Image (spheres, each protein chain N blue to C red):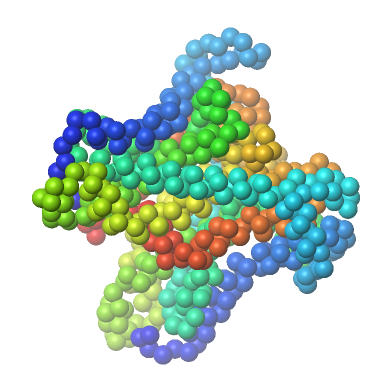
Length: 284
Length: 293
């Protein structure tokens, strides 16, 4: 601190505590709601701020499905969590794998039409999948990939963010290192495997965190390509619960919401260092 | 950045680049081309004959009052999301940059909503405002402000904006904090020795030096408000009441997949592509500036 101003310091703490409060209040309430029964929630004006006694009931019903007290049957969230996990992993790993290879080719090789290739990859940065949903949907349906893991993931891999990140990183690898590897007789693939990959460790980890969250949180695309319940990711589970025709089981909505939020939140908190690096790098 | 290409091989680079090329050709260029192509076609009401109509779809689009309204809605929505999101995040970042004790804890607690899916953010805020059990709706009723986002367009817009801002604060906060920490301490110390108050130091030194970060975040937030908020709108208001929260992305989805107007939807896609490209160019202009800065 430049000068000691206790008043400002307290004001800063106050602002931060208020900020944390605003961030956590909706989540706290949602958790509270998930520990109450559906009747308790609908009967309350407003929702009680103390946990109810139905924690286990709500989560068991949300995770494994079954009949609610009102007699409606509910789908299980556990398989949806698996679909989310699977697709998020495929998107993250797939994107990193194809980007590492193409960035390697772009930085370390000379070949005809390199500029054109570079620009073709570059232009994909500009258009998020939301902009071209209609035609992308048609392409996926013509390829008979609706309701498949491939249809759910591959179109989301088709963007070059990761390629650019790796390109930027590869450009900082000192020339001497490449020369040394060549002098020792290493071919390109050997250089890639034994020098470049180990060096890219932190970049890969950082990108993995970002892409995992990106994959997990996809909404519009799964909404279009999955019509079969067994292919629903968890976000679709939420969507289906809240669009119930007559009667929404809010305790289940809240329990499912908490379940959907936990895995990516854990990834951010546990891998905070890489997460911050990944975010900052991705925007360079 | 120096151009260098130490390895030579006639086939290896193509083999390395093939997976990426394959994916973007099939799932990017083909659909993008289709969008351009379909935007100049029109299908009759029975899904039969397809005819070439030139720019008719675009003409129809811009003559359509509801489309122009959707543009206005989107402009208002993204201005609110970017303005509030940046303002609050900057306030939090300045505070976090001042405190010593607990700084890491605050940071951890503030950044993790980045991981929350937009649809989840929408549901969280819906709970707070849903009648009859929503806590904030209840408090507002006590204060004599009956809340009804199902029928009142302003309330619906406020709800969507709050959820969108809540989710984006962590991202903005992180970048503002990094920007603040990159400002040389000596500058601020010099101003302090000259007797400038913290308030004055902030507006004459810190804020101008942060402007590259602010501008960058402005563009990112616009893109976020344009595209990533679809899930929030779909989960909370379905674009309603009426069309009061039907932002452009929601309309592309609705017209294409609910109203089955593929030509119109494709034309909208093309317009959106134009918007994103304009925003990206804006951002790159800024990157160039930053290099000389």
